[in-house]
Length: 67
Image (cartoon, rainbow, N blue to C red; front, side, top):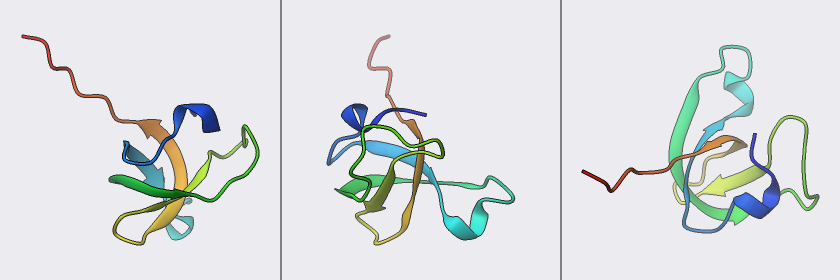
């Protein structure tokens, strides 16, 4: 899971919402706010997406512009 320094406003990320922790279902969205103040968290940095959904970042989505 990425540290807080790797998560910035406007990035596309995959999060797991609290009610999906058991299944691990991911939700993709754009970061609107950072809710975790510490540099790292064992379950991921908590963020709010532009859709209002809240969850912990599992991965930062990168797009391959090559090719």
